[in-house]
Length: 134
Image (cartoon, rainbow, N blue to C red; front, top):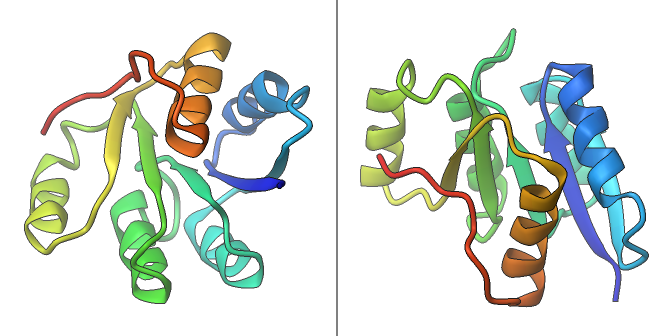
C-alpha cells in the first residue's frame, strides 16, 4: 500500500532534501507545498499519511497551518521540523493544550533521520526518532 507524505516548507532546498531522502522508497508518494495555504489545499485534495511541517513561513505560519490541517482531519500525523521552535514556543504550548497532536524536531535532519522517522511513524519500525520536547 502506498503511503502519502506531504512536505510543507517555504525553503525549496528543504523540500528537495526530503524528496532526495525518500525518493527511492517505492511505497511512498511524495507531495510538496511551498507555504501553509497550499499545504492545507494539498492535504484536502489527497489525505497524507504523514506531514512534515515548517513553522517559519510567509503567509500563515506553521502553527496556523497545523490548526487548519487538524480542523480538516484531527487524525493527521504532523511532524514539525523547524529551526525556530523557541520563537513559536507559546503557540505550540497552546496548540498542545488545545489537544492538537504533533511531534517536534529541530532542523536540520539528515537523510537517515528523515528515513528513520518515516519508517517509525508509518511502518512502526522501532528506532530512535529525532524529537524535541516543548
